[in-house]
Length: 113
Length: 117
Image (cartoon, rainbow over all chains, first blue to last red; front, side, top):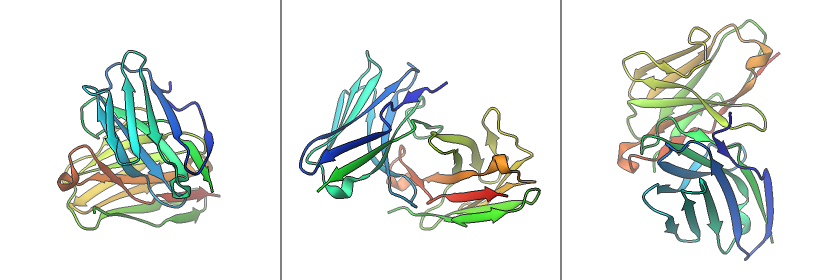
């Protein structure tokens, strides 16, 4: 039973355009959401997070939107850069912290020059 | 920033042998570390929570006698896959929380690719 779903295994965008990565969840008890970025042969690195008390969090080119009623969150990257090409994982947990994170399968983003 | 080192990055072993994977926090102390496993095209799945000085907490469906976890110090946790079989071939990755980096951020190691022949 996949509690965190990333339905798009891959996404390709042009440099300078917006990248939108989507994530859906089924567990209404989740109250904290994170995005991690993973390059080949490296571990995931934390990118941005959002608490369920907010609907938007922004950090530079990265913005995460949370729609609790739809149980949906999205990561916007604008403008996209070739160095953003990586696998992006959506994760969630129920304790307001990072313990026992539940991950999605990831979306491979390719930003073309 | 916080760094977690994982070793070995790749290991190939024969069926029936045991393999040990080390996870070290290099510049911070971690009372808790987490071990994940990822099969191809699947999510990172939490296997167990490693607690310094006490027994690990295993997720449902994970055999504690097969996946031995030892967290003997504040900077080292080890995962031993005992009597490995081909179905144990997977990507194993550890993570730790650096309290100084923020309570909600996990730092991950680079992972260990295990192939059991």
